[in-house]
Length: 109
Image (cartoon, rainbow, N blue to C red; front, top):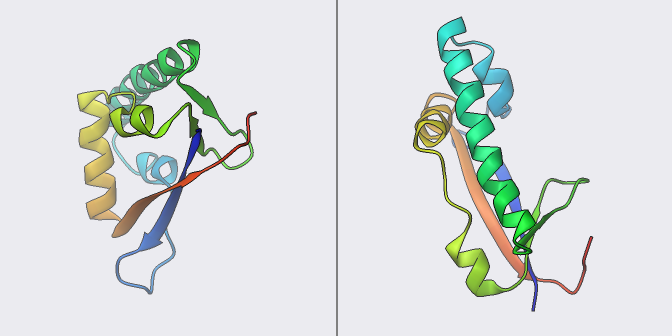
């Protein structure tokens, strides 16, 4: 059975609005922005491999993931290490709590 993963962002301090990853990236130096862009290209490449393999669909409306089954969702698609470093830095510096909500779905895009 297919499962859907929705990504939920909230503030860890409950007072500040959540700044998006890409808005935060714009606050970094030009060199860091270029490094992130290269890492993001690799990161999206990993996602595209999962799509081509038939393991993953990306919902264009809410950018959620629909995996072919729970086992595949648990395995995931891998991460670019540089992108992951930026991601964890973003979460910490912007006080963002990130959660993945996984639920069964019958829907296919």
